Image 1 (tube, helix red, strand yellow):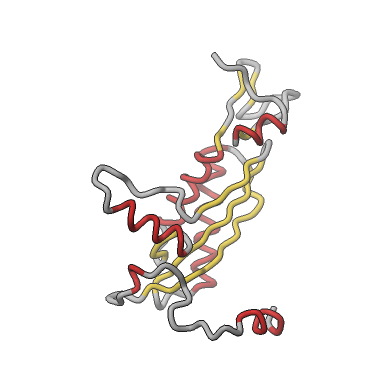
Image 2 (cartoon, rainbow, N blue to C red; image 1 turned 90 degrees about the vertical axis):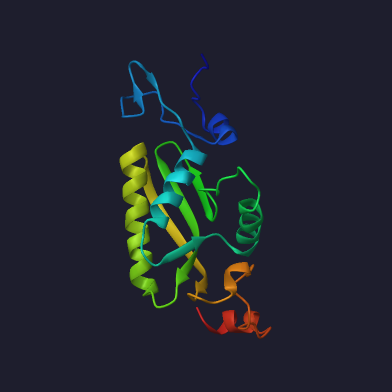
Length: 170
């Protein structure tokens, strides 16, 4: 039997959520401590985001390219955590998602639905409080298009003036 993680330093090194030892919560009781690995929260968030209609795929260009290669290897399964990064603390979790949306989806409404579903799933399954869900929309999928092999959202739209645009638009 392993001893429970009880300090922030140990928890961060092991990617575990830790609840302080004083007081009972759902994760800490008189009978023991439950720790939740960051990969658990990452998978829950990835699955919850994929449940929303209008989400085509998760992951940025490099993750999508690696995923396409991985899918071609017999016996492998898609990564449920692709496009998802999490920070798990003592009682809270924060989530960052890289999303590719379907063409025609209302991105504002879609992001609200993703955020709501991810928060509900993580809080229900882990009892961790979700402090934020940041969503970066990196590309738009056009059905029937040939962008499935694309490795990024800058196919024809890049003009080289992205730094100037960022300075003018906030």
